[in-house]
Image (cartoon, rainbow, N blue to C red; front, side, top):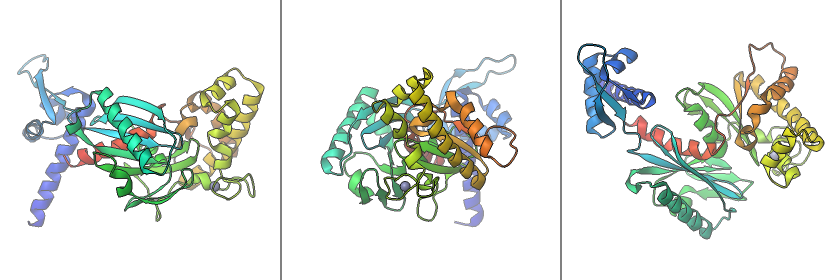
Length: 374
Ligand SMILES: [Zn+2]
């Protein structure tokens, strides 16, 4: 095939892709709307939407009201024609999310299921996943695949390279995916949380996602992509030193951020329940206030350091991030006291998702791969 032909096909594909995204983001639209908003000719748009209708990706839904002239056909995306599952594996739980092509959360569940590196564990997870799909009324043929978020280093070429927290070292993707009936895609949990934040239609173009769960991690999101690094460890700030020779970290070193800012630093003081900790903080109980002050002091060091390197917004995610909105002014005050430069506004923000961000982000990678190919 000659070069020009390939380029034309590529342009057509890009346009088809843009039009499909426009339709699913705007609900019900018409060909003239799309042509006007996307600065394309009406015949081009009409041809594209015809193709999308033929593929079953767009549906005609009657006519739109008009103030004069011919009424335009109402078009909307068939967002449920394909769906994806997100599975977030942690030390003691699994979270499941079912999403569609528009990234809507159709169902979410968090289940107690302690991790074990054995066949029995994955068989049990598969059983729970199938039950979850039954309860969600999911049509199996529509499932594109499962995005699996894992708390460890994911070598995207072939394997889960390392997870201190689960005690896993070098597990091939095949070893896990053979337990499931759908194609599996693997992702680091912080990367998955970042992806959920960034891929939203109104999501920021670039930011650092600081995942504050029972382990601390992070991810750099830049222009719709996650930066991976030479060894797939980009953003692993949990093991950034914040106190020289400080408290021991589970990785074996001392003074890592994880030793000061994992969610368990807070939940351990409240019988293992983070919500109980934040309720005590709300009541201004002395011990909770003291712990939070200590926690946010180290958090501020980390946020400021990350910002000095990357000069972008820092989004607080993970378990603690889902409670951060109510405390963001206090956190910003501590960060700004450390910051050398004058800023136009706070660069530390709370995440948008309270539940299941990592599971959702993992699922969104699957749907995004599909949408890219439209
Ligand atoms: Zn460490």
